[in-house]
Length: 295
Image 1 (cartoon, rainbow, N blue to C red):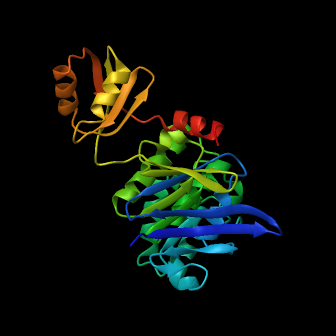
Image 2 (cartoon, helix red, strand yellow; image 1 turned 90 degrees about the horizontal axis):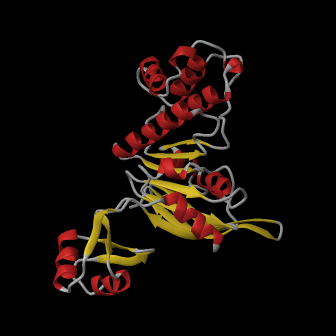
C-alpha cells in the first residue's frame, strides 16, 4: 500500500479549476518532488494533501486513511511544513516551541528529541533565542525540525529550501535523503531540480493545474550512453536486443538501460565502431525545461 495516494484530485474556486485530475502515489522510502512554474498547482496539492484545503474532486489517502474524512486518524503519522516559513510563537525560544510540540505529540524524553532535531538542522546555536529574532533561514530550518520531531511516516514539505543559503540547501537535501532511507515517504515541492535529482525517486511535472509528466529517477536498471559511427542505425539495432530497455537517440548518442556488455556485443558483431561508452546521468533540469516548453 502506498504511504501517500492522490487520486483524480481537483480543486475549483468558483468556476475556475486550479487543479484538475491529478493522480500519483508515494511509497515508503520514496521522495516524490512536485515541480512546475509558479501558479501550476504545487502549493494547492500540498494544502490538499495535508488537509488544510478540501478537494472539489478526487481524494487523498495517508497510510490508507482518507485525509478529509478521517481527520486526526489520517494525519497522526504526518509531518509537514506548508507555505514556509512555519508559524511559531515569536515570544518563545526555538527550543520552547519545539518542546511544547513534543509534549502535545506525546514524545518520550522530549528534551532529548528536541535537542537531536535541532542539532540535525544546525539551529542548536540559536535554540535559546526568541523566534522573533530568527532569520528567514533559521525559521525555515526550525520548521523542518518541527516536521520531523515526532518521527512521522509521511513528510510533506512546501519549498523546504526556500530562504536557505547553499550550505542550508545541502543540509536539507541530505536530511530528506536520510529520512527516505529510514522508510519515510517524502513529498515536496521544489525549484532546485539539479540538487534534488541526486536523491529524489520521482518527479511530477505540473503545468496549468495538471500533471503533465511523471519522471522516474531512481531505477533498479542502470542507464548508459554510447556513441558510434552511425547512431541512427545503432539505435534501431539496440531496440531489437533482448534485455535492453528504453533505447532512444539523444543527439549523437544512443541511450539505453540494461547490461552494457550486451549492447557492445551486438554493435561489434554488426560492424559498428564504438567511439564512447559510459553511464548516463539524467539531467532533470534540462528535461524539465524541454518538457515545459512543449506543455
